[in-house]
Length: 167
Image (cartoon, rainbow, N blue to C red):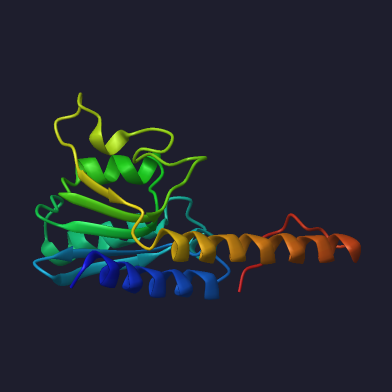
């Protein structure tokens, strides 16, 4: 399968996050053209600030492979990883990162920082960015537009708009 096909799978996983009321980010970890693990954002649902899509997939892969090293694996994720996730990618020795939308606020794979290719670390990843970027960014933009509209409506009704709505 191509990078675009794997990213489409990650986009489908992002929809699962959105169905939970989470920021729609999905990740799929592939080795030898086989899915090893997958994940989607679940921070609100699990009350866990580390439950990012990438972290979910990496935890699952470590268990499945019975190894904390994820050698020769490629991670496909719809949004550029944050510093936490980028650090885990380096420590797990993932070979390649492919992401869709860049994150110009917290991205750690080239947009704000470049943790995954930092030459002082003993491992760097190959990075391909912008795969299905418009679709990935569009899903995120639509989600945040809806969330802002919902918060505005709650505020107009005199209800607190800062409470996360768990489903």
